[in-house]
Amino acid sequence: MSNPQTPQNKDRSLEQALTNKIIDDYFEDSESWLRAILRMCIFSLAYIDGESVFIVECPNQAVAKRLSRKTYPFRGMIYFLTDNFEGSDRTLFCYHDDNKGTWRCFDTKTHSWKSLKNLQSSIMPKDYP
Image 1 (cartoon, rainbow, N blue to C red):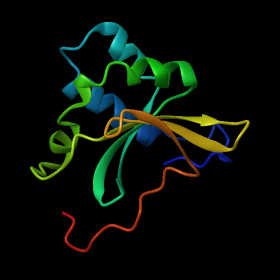
Image 2: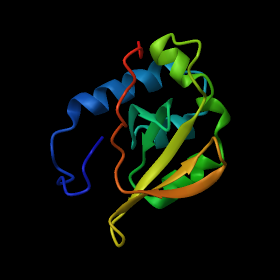
Image 3: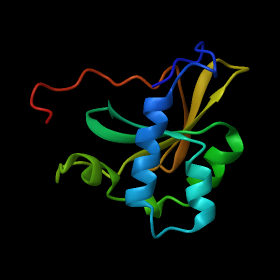
Image 4: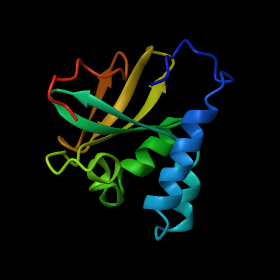
């Protein structure tokens, strides 16, 4: 995941290319407005609180809030990316709050917003695929 102190112009072309590939493959039948919004985001996988989590790093609060109201297209994303049948459907829609220096994330597991200091993965278990 990106570091909030990293300049926005830092080359994230590989991350963006992978995100676009996921959008093209997984969201090909979704509404065009959803695909357009997702192309402004960066996707990643993390391991948080003992489970796999799909993270959508949004460019701002408005995008994160809009996506947080339409979570059903993200069900099954962990399985799609990892083939892990045990994977959760948990997704975090996050944006960086520059004023507080934290990430604000909508968690589909709790259906609530939370603050995180960073979006780095916790230590992965040894048996993680």
